[in-house]
Picture 1 (cartoon, rainbow, N blue to C red):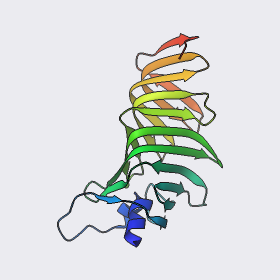
Picture 2: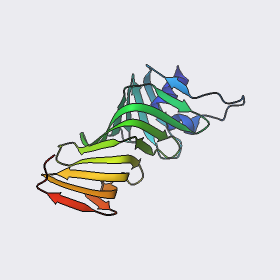
Picture 3: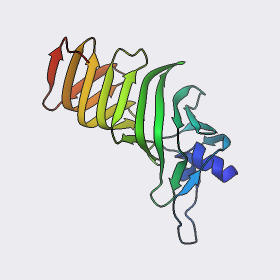
Picture 4: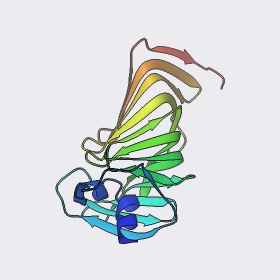
Length: 192
């Protein structure tokens, strides 16, 4: 059970702390209803604490502040060979202090548990917590080092009856800036 908690709870922490198996690797293992907490003291992208309660995972920094929260409809599968975890039909929120700042919904998620990067795929919806800014992108990557959300595969942003499209989207959560690039077009007063 402890290994299960580490595997799910730290999708990244587990990979950083686990030694390579001495027997031949098996298929990815699904992890279901597990609860508990795991703390990473190893150097790497996921320093701090990862808590797991059922299908909910929360990531806290080293001071105990909530960084992000994830809820998946399906089990999380972990692959020691690729050092990644996957989940389906996820809702993820990036925190700014005590409040959610950005909310991401996606059909699929891959977590690289060495770098801490999260990659949402198969058509991703992103919105600010206040609902004022909404995006749709083909895939979205969360870069934990810079706290940037990077969307590729075509991006569409809606805000105050304005629709802007482009090939790439970068949300810099620290600088509070949003940039669209690659064939950017805008329609002001567009209906949804």
